[in-house]
Image 1 (cartoon, rainbow over the protein chains, first blue to last red):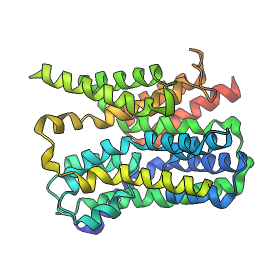
Image 2 (cartoon, one colour; image 1 turned 90 degrees about the vertical axis):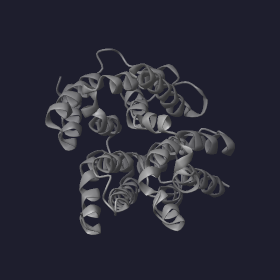
Image 3 (cartoon, rainbow over the protein chains, first blue to last red; image 1 turned 60 degrees about the horizontal axis):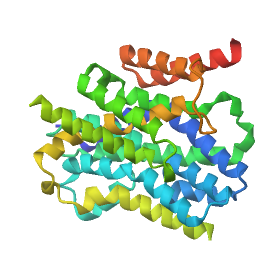
Image 4 (cartoon, chains in turn blue, yellow; image 1 turned 60 degrees about the vertical axis):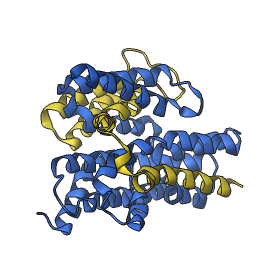
Length: 228
Length: 103
């Protein structure tokens, strides 16, 4: 049985490599906010209040492009609705926590933290202090996100756009799913999701980001049924 | 006004994060649903990966000889064999930079 501290440390170490993409993306995110003409305080406050990379950029781009507040808020909601899926997966491992702890830990769940902690949970179902892994991974991502968006706000246009640092985002998610490409069913689900996302890319409110996972999960359900 | 919009967006995002963890009873989900949920990472992340590679900043498809495709292939190969997240990200970025800056 691992101690709380050991599991917490494992959580930190599990997401640490993703900083190679989170930090550049955070810097880009802060810099874009300033470039679009928003006040530094406002751009930074989003990192605390919303705490969701892609949705923060989309939000500011929409507002600066003259979209209504309703459209901006709806888009953020749609983009972040994938967290309902993450929550459904994590709930199995967090069900023993008190209601208050569940409310608090939910704030820290982001993509990479979910992915890495979920991998740990699947392999260590019998540990008692599982949620410390999520605290470690989510806490690390939170701190780095705050520092890097702040750095982007300060450095602003010093970050050369030619570097294409946003490309680090797909790469970090490739690193997360790449080991599953040896499993046929996972590959079918991934390709379904990927192609759907390209097909529905122009759907309103960036809804491709939730439409394609839903289609892919239907395919997963179908595949599981055929398997039996 | 912008502040109010941000706060509402933040509350909605938080509710998405919290609902399934704190408000929904796990027992409501049947075995079949749980089996499907095991596919969530594979069903969600390609929706971030594919557009990040194949669609450019202006929302249009890239050419098939775009350096991002090369970078992604390198990252997949390096990631698969090294099982290392840092190596995956760095190899993808560097192979992308080599093409756009050196070739």
